Structure formats: structure tokens, C-alpha cells
Amino acid sequence: MSFDKLQELIKAKKNPTVAGLDPKPEYVPPHILRASLDKYGETLEGAADAILQFNKGLMDALCDVVPAVKPQSAYYERLGWQGMRALEETIRYAREKGLFVMADVKRGDIGSTAQAYSDAWLGKTRVGSADLPVFDADCLTINGYMGSDTILPFLETCRVEDKCLFTLVKTSNPGSGELQDMVAGDRVVYQVMGDLVQRLGKDDIGKYGYSRCGAVVGATYPSDLRALRKRLEHTFFLVPGYGAQGGTAEDVRFAFDKYGRGAIINASRSIMCAWQKTGHDGQDYQDAARAAAEAMRDDIKQFVTIL
Amino acid sequence: MSFDKLQELIKAKKNPTVAGLDPKPEYVPPHILRASLDKYGETLEGAADAILQFNKGLMDALCDVVPAVKPQSAYYERLGWQGMRALEETIRYAREKGLFVMADVKRGDIGSTAQAYSDAWLGKTRVGSADLPVFDADCLTINGYMGSDTILPFLETCRVEDKCLFTLVKTSNPGSGELQDMVAGDRVVYQVMGDLVQRLGKDDIGKYGYSRCGAVVGATYPSDLRALRKRLEHTFFLVPGYGAQGGTAEDVRFAFDKYGRGAIINASRSIMCAWQKTGHDGQDYQDAARAAAEAMRDDIKQFVTIL
Image 1 (spheres, each protein chain N blue to C red):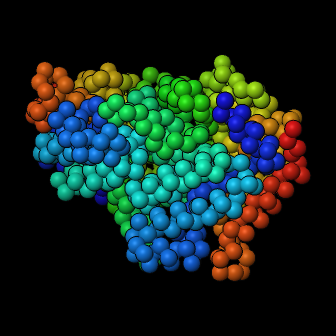
Image 2: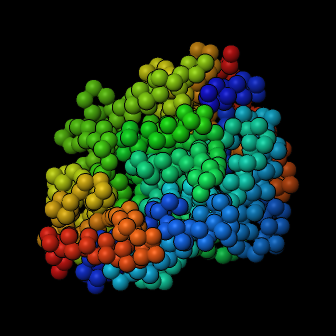
Image 3: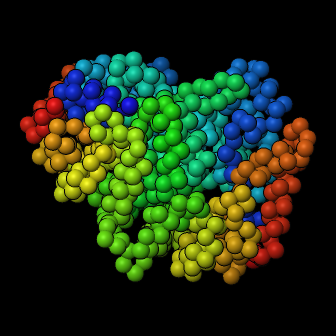
């Protein structure tokens, strides 16, 4: 099942991290951006072409270092349908390169609409007599504020297509506690969400002990991360917040089980924009990204051994 | 400000309802679907063309009956970038017809990503020296589970662009209570979210007494709706759940203030798919949709008088 595949890619590359692909035109090295804007003008199409070329170059440089990529939909939506086309092509290219694709979209809606989102991102859309894959990621982030009946259609698609989910549980941003940390009875809200995710997944556990229902748990609240790892033993974690947001390798070690499994740590801008710190003109962006990804891997490996 | 504009459109059309545009290929009358699939094959492009033609026909029939349309992003995403192109064209067409456009996307993410979503849906994206509008809706639905720092970037874009938001507070689905009804101190979770929305909007109140920060409150829990109307006096409500989900005109009257203002009621499938109940072949879909929209308006007008 799908998290088994991710776990095996993590083991093969000895690297429990995922590279976020959240490109803005200003993150693209000037020689790439200029070529696209010369070709298409200062348009959404020009910007979408630039980020696609950038993404492909990044994946060429990273595909034997990282097991997975995580494109964040917002950065493609802001380039309109041309951006969404670049996202589709990014996902296709990632899969050709053997990378596990985590579409970070944080969708959530009532049943029939949740089903439509599932079709879009994980499943297939029926047109006439044809069943057509659309964005076709390996897994998806979702938001469960609306309740379990809004999560179940995604989960059903995961079962059919052998894919998986991460539901927001405890997020990494400064304001995450406003709602998520509220005390309700003997639990706080994010524990309720976490328990729900664990329960929804419990009948479908893969060979490493994890269900299809993962959770997003930020690195920036390490004691919460540690407690959730104990509480949700069958729940695979996607951990944002390492690096720029303040989470350290020492913090994120709490996300892993005793076999060094059950979690993947995200970094986005520190890898994508590594070229901006080399003092060069961006021609070296692939080397810079690869070096940053290797440094992150090695930083985490100080604290986590993957069996 | 933006909700004033909506309120004036509601008054002009004597109709506090919004038509959802959540099209699936199977909702499109056969003669339209066939023409598109004959032209483009059983492809996402063919289906996207069909839903765009259908949407335009619906808006032609509805634009002097309803003040607003609410396209639901999921139904466009499931047709890939071709669907997103149809969504852009749907929004552009709606604005040409003088309809207020509520993009139902329920996005939510950390600050920089929330800003990217705001650019996409409400604001502009910078490419080189150009600031380009993208989907350019009048207002947006968002999900605040992650906290107020994930709402603020949207609100800031609303101020700059004179637009507005609806944050999920109490949703209409059967499982909405799992999280939203949890008791936390002297409030339940959805009240906390509602109070947050009211507070974020309080310094920017329009001439009818409503801020830019609206709330989604379902029709299917009428006593909650009634209590929230009293509690959140400056918060404009978007009310789903009328019709197929079980909410009645008697229920939704609680969403309005004493002047019959401050809320808009959504219906989607009952209008879009009205032709399927006429017993005809779908050639009459415009008349059927218009009649359904008028019936809904008249149903609600029994209980609500707009001053």
C-alpha cells in the first residue's frame, strides 16, 4: 500500500525528507525566467513555463537524493489554468523520475464535493465512457474541520487507487493553537482530530504498521509532536516547519518510531532558493538545491536511523 | 465595500439567493454534452467545453433572477487545467453579466501560501513588472482551522481589492458537529471560529452593518443558525443546505437580520439539474433552471422581506 511504497523509497535513499515545490517566479533563476518571459511575455503563461522548467531542473538534481516531492497547489493556482497545467506536467515528470508525489492542497468539503476533489487529485473522472486520471498524485493533504463524512470520500478513493492522505492535525504556524489547542473535555481539538484520523485508518494497515490516513503535524511544537507520535501509532506523519519556520533536526526526531519510520520531513524554500545564497547568478541552482537537500538529510540523520 | 455591492444586488433582484455552479458532465443536457464530445472526444477538454457552454446558458437564463453565482472549484479541478480554464471563463462571463461571483474553494494554509491563494482568487500575481489578475472572483470561501494568521493574508487582499470572504463556521453536513460542536470552556468550537471571524472584521464595517469577513453557516442546523445571527451581528452569512440537504425556507429565515439583510442562501443541483425533472430531453434546461430559481426565491420571500 501507498505508505509502504513511500517508506521503501525513504529507506532506499536513506532520506526521510520531501522537497516542497512551491515556486514563485521570483524564485526561478534569472536565466530561466528570462528565457520564458522572452518567449511568452510577462504573462501567466510565461511564468508557468518558467516554473515548470525550474521544477524539472530541480527534480533532475534531486531525484536520487529525495524520495518525494510536495508541490503546493497555491503557487500554481496563482498562475491560473496555465499554472495548473504546469502542475499537471510537474506531477507527471516527478512520477517518471520515480518520485513519490504529495499534492499539498488541503482540500475539504461535503461528501459529493469531497468526491469531486478525490477524482481530481487521486482518482479518475468519468467523461462519457472513459475514466480519465487528472492530477493523479500519490497522496493528498486534506482539512478535516467539516467532519469525518468529508474525509471518507477521499479515503474510499485511496482504497480503490492504492493511495493515501494526510489530514491536518497540528499545524506548524504561529496561530495554530487558537483553535487546535482548545481544551474540549479531556482532550484538545488537535488530539480529537488525530484520534479521528487514527480511527478512520485502523482497518487498513500496511506492512510497516501505518494506515492510509496520515496526519500533518508541525515540527515547531516538538512536545506536541512527541506526544502525538505515541498517541497515534498507526498514523504516518508529514512534518512541515523544519528550517525557516524554526523546527530543528533535534525537534523532528520525535516524529519517527523506534525503527526510524513513520514520518517524512518537508523543506521547500531552503532547497528551491538555495541558489540565492551562493552569491552566484543562479546558473548553479541545481548544485545548490542538491547540496541543500543533502545537508538537510545529513542533519536529520544525526538523530534518526532508518531501519 | 464588497458585501454592500452584494446586498444591493440582492435588493435590486429581490432575491437573497445564489446559484451554485457545480457542474458534472452528467448534469449537462445531452445535446450540449454530445456537441462538445463530438468536437473534442471523451476527454477532459471535451467535458470542460461542455460545462462551460452549460454554465453560460445557465447564467443567460438566471442573470436577471439571481444576484450571484457560486462556482465550486472541485468540479472544475476534476477536469484538470482544462476545467480550470473553464472556471476562469465562467467567472469572466458571470462578471460581464453583472453577477457577483463567490468562488467556493475553502482554501486555508500558512501565511505565505495563504497569500498565494489570495493572489490566485482575489488579487493579482506579479510576473516581471506586470500585476495580473487571475481567477478574480468577488469573494472567496476559506477554512480557518489553522488559525487567524492563515486568514489575515486573505483579509488584507480583500482590503486592497475591495473584496470579501466567507470563513467556515458551522457547516451543513451531517458530520459537522464532530469537531465544530465540541464544548471548549464556555463556548463550542464553531462559536470560537465565529467570534474570531467577527473580531477580524470589526474595524471595517460597510454601510449595511457587515464586515468583509463573512461566515458559512448551514441551514440544516436552524437553531444554531438563529443563535449565530444574534451572536455575530456584523457577519454576513453564506447559507448552504437549503433544498436537497434538508434546510427549508422556514429554517433559513433565521439567517437574516430584521431588515432582511445579512445573508444569502445557496442552491446548486436543484437549479442546475432542474431540467432532469421536467421529463423532457434537456433542450428546456434554461427555462427549467429559471423556474427553479424563481420558485426558490418565492419560497424564501414568504418568510423574508428585504428592506
